[in-house]
Image 1: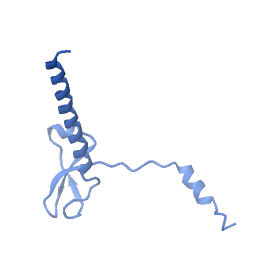
Image 2: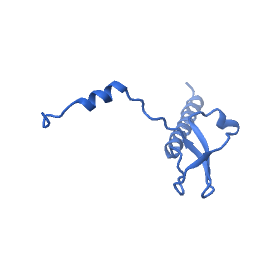
Image 3: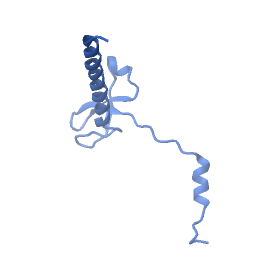
Length: 97
């Protein structure tokens, strides 16, 4: 392989990895839920524009109290099995026996 191709491959790969790392960090610092990160009031959902319509895991929000507008991550509550919670409620600890 020529030196020029190796140079383009290495620096092109570093450029792509930098973009992936920036995306991961951006997703990590986004607030989750529906509370305002500035004043902790409940935010309202805003009609998404253009690209945000494609990103279904995010929510455009606006805070009535302080005027903050931005993006939240949508967090879904974990699904629990109905049978497992009923089973755990009926179990007794060794001290209760």
